[in-house]
Length: 421
Ligand code: AMP
Ligand code: GLY
Image (cartoon, rainbow, N blue to C red):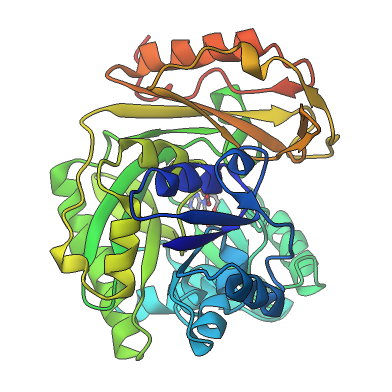
């Protein structure tokens, strides 16, 4: 089979490597890919929102299956477009993608189906915000309705701040959002739960915990994710039962009822409070960097899984996992998530001796001749699997030390919740 993979992050490098391990695969193209995927696949530089161009590439390269990594093309309807053109594609359609593309849509699904989530109010005018404020307490979470590249959420400690942030959103701070979702602040521990879904069934696809804040001890602004580990010990068997019965099943049932059954990866971002799960957000794709710690633990051929999903035979697929732990630390360009430079040389990558349990997944990287250059804020994901989170982290940190990339930084405390001092 020939496979096209859309995206250019660490998530896509991890997927690309796993796809490349499948005996079913002849050729992979990555659109646009990064320096890491270029070692396994043919990178083609094209705009991932130019669906006509992508279709042309799919025809030229005789692609049998398209796998979509990031949310934006999904929310904009790439799956509907490709299916209409008889292309087999893995991922949710435009309607189902509103679970991530519109926080108001996700919240309405929760409200109508009794899915546990923070109490909320959807506002489209500042007047609605002010009158809601009269009846509630701070802290309050203010969210832009549409996609905002992880920047659309603010936890406000004062009512004044709520008004300020809401006004900015109404004034068009995020193009995709004309509505604001105000939410009760939930105090608990976050964890991510993944499933893979076809029209008829779903299967477990791992758990993970991400680290969203840029600095150690969870300080500083939010990022796309500074590191992750899998599995998340917080998600016990009894909690998992609740996640499935109270959150996953009612959501999938609701979309089926709307005649738009969900298919693809579904990522539930959860807050766990008093051993009860609350849905914070849905993502309609694998997480990044969560994917980089889940995929190395997967034993089953991922292409076989994708094929069974696209033909709605997931029920026949046994998905097997390694009984090992995995962690990744994200190496970022200095300045991220604010301003940072690109085209910074990363000289020592070949000096690192990786065993079969270690992986460097590229994110924002590119090659110029033979020199590896940075090409984004999150640059490399140093990843390792083993049996002990502390040992895994120490190994990753020793690789980062060896890399000695002067223009980069990372969090050295990834996994602090599961590594007892
Ligand atoms: P989201 O983009 O919805 O995942 O929000 C980004 C981050 O904001 C989450 O990972 C949480 O850390 C935090 N957050 C979002 N909603 C809430 C909430 N209702 N209560 C507490 N924290 C929240
Ligand atoms: N790491 C968070 C996300 O992928 O949305």
